[in-house]
Amino acid sequence: MKARITLAALLIGAGGTAMAQTALPPEPAVHEAIAAHPLVQAADARVEAARAEARSLRTGGHEFNFQASHMRRDVQGLGTVPEYDASLSHAIRLPGKARLDREAGEFGIVAAENHAEDARHQAATLLNDLWWDWLGASAEARVDAQSVTNYEATLAAIARRVELRDMAPLEADQTEAALGDARTTAAQSRGRADLALARLKARFPQLPLPAEPPEPPQPQLPQLSLETIAAQVIERSHEIGAASAQSGRYAALAERARKDRLADPSLGVRLFSEQGGRERGAGLMVSMPIGGANRRAQADMAASQGQAAAAELAAVRLDVQEMASRDVTRAHSAMQAWQQSREALNAQMATLSKTRRGHQLGAIDLADVLQAERLTHAAFRTEALARAEANRAINCLMIDSHNLWIAD
Image (cartoon, rainbow, N blue to C red; front, side):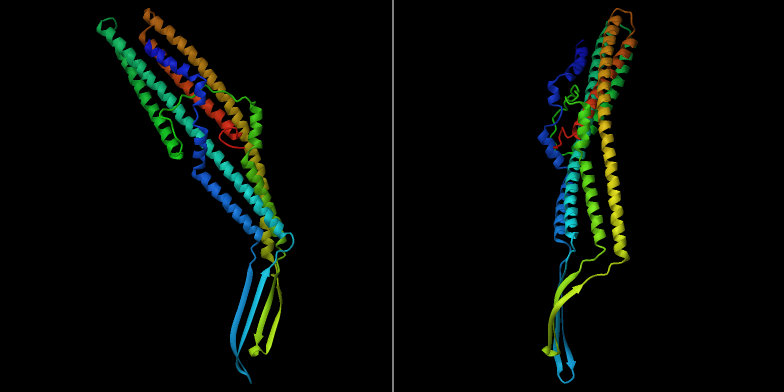
């Protein structure tokens, strides 16, 4: 009887509300673990790169160009005389180009910042999956370990009755076979839990973990309606923000390339001395490249890239809308699956209780009792996994809507 009560306690403990507050790691620790993820750090570095690029675009790519020459020439009647030539020039951006360069740089910063936030989002999603992999596998392992304990207690009781010649040795053999199967199943589930823990530690080594995995709590849907949260997934999407900024950047670059078909002129001054100083002069210089097929091709390429970026923005919007719909459907169906598994478990526990009473009265064979035990343990395992999956799905929805672990 004690073994039966212990197994049932797994179900009772899973429904406690206090457990819901401890099933997730502390939020400050989660933020630190996400910030330390290599992909997040890489995205943060790209933000700094985008800011540096924006500074470069603001100042422009033109620089002062200095040229000088000095030589000695033989001049009839004068002999060898020194001569020199020096010029200093600088290209000037034509009207409208500097504004487009600034816009492209600013859009680049916005895109990089949104990519960085999306990297945090992806890291949070990965952490959520790995966390519930561990909790779900650990819950399954606990059920299987308790199943072994139950069979061991049953076998000990039957072995005693066999010694007293109150039961046939065949029934002890049947129970021992069931115990062997339970031990195999427990070893397999323990291995899955250890593997899940190893993956969690490998991906997020900075995350402090409890000595024992918490029991997955009774899942609860958020107070906001699922439709409202689905709308938040779309409204707060950094993927859309990044794609929108990238589209704006490519549009600015396309307009910049179109304007660049008329090249920027260079203005400068020139000083020279010839025939040993007998001829000296100073003047202004103007130069301008003559654009041709290459500049037309560059403008066409930039225009096509702008069109591609606009199409990609539309595709990202569709992806995020699909993700919002998928998250809501997944959370709703996972919640229903857990509720049904809970009802099935309650029914199976009632069946097991009746089967045991029938066996005690001699109306039911031990094989039927062992089969009922197997079905009950399977129902416990199914309920534990469904509970973890429901929590996973609900947390995923909350993460995608920036209501958990991700700042809006």
